[in-house]
Length: 325
Image 1 (cartoon, rainbow, N blue to C red):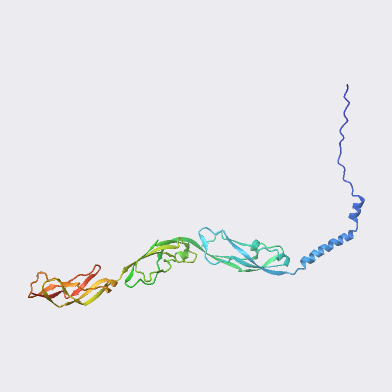
Image 2 (cartoon, rainbow, N blue to C red):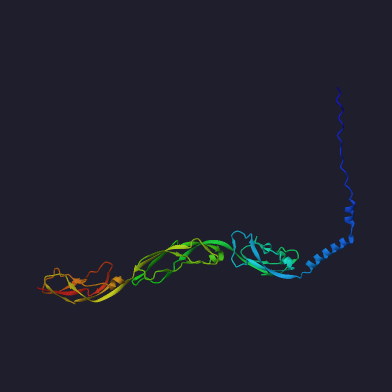
C-alpha cells in the first residue's frame, strides 16, 4: 500500500515593523512649539539655579602624608600634619568638598640628611570642578632630616642627700654601665652620658641596692633600656682623735707603786662613731714584771686598744716606776 506524501512545513518570514499608528503620529507631531518652549524653560531654570549662585570661600583642614622617606633617615623637626586650604566656589560645589580626598602626599624619595623644602601650590591638590584653591597655609613645608645612628652611652648615677653621721660614700656602681641610644646622629653624638633619677642616701648607715630609672634624653632619642640597677657602698668615716690626761695603770703586783708621770696623751685612729664612745680606762699601763722594789726604773708605756683602733702616737714613751715593799 502506498504511503501518502507529507505536506511541506510552512516557513514564516519576519514581518517589517509597522508604521506608527495614527494616534501615535498625532501625539508626536502635536504642539511642537509648546514642546520647544518647555525645553527652553528647563534649560533656563538650570542656568538660573547654578549660575545665579554667588561665589564663596571655605577653609578646610587637609591632612599631610609624608611618603617614601629613605631607610635610615628620620624627620627631626616639628612638621605639620595638617594644612589649611582656602577654596573658592559656589556653595553647592563647596558643600561637596571632602578634605580626605584633598590629602597632600609629599614624596620624599631621594632626600638626604639636611633640609628639604617643599613649596605648596594649588596644582598639588585634586580640585573639584567649579572650585579653585586661593590660599595655602603654610605655603611651604621645610623638613630637617638626619641619619639614624646607634651608640653605647655611659650612665651616671645621681645621688641625693648625705649618709648618716659617721658614714661616707665608698663607691657607686651601675649595671649595665652603658646603654644603647638610638636616634638622630646630631643628638646621639652629643650625649656624653645619661643621668638617672636621684637615688636618696639621706641618713643611711649601710649599702644601698635599688633599681633607678634613666632620664629621658629627649630629642627623639630612644634608649635600649629605661631602668638600671644601682649599688651604693658606704664605709665608716675614719678619723684621728687625741686623748689627753689618760691615767697610766700598773699591772697587778703585790707591792705598792708610784709612776712618774702618772698620765699620758694618746692619738688614736679609728671609726668616728667608735672613737666618740671609746673608754680608755685601763688601756694605758706598765708591766712591773722583773722590777725589784726600792729604786726607780724606766719602763715602756704600753697601750691596749679594741679591734679596729690604731695607735698613731703616744707620749711619753717611757715612765719612771718605783715599787715599795
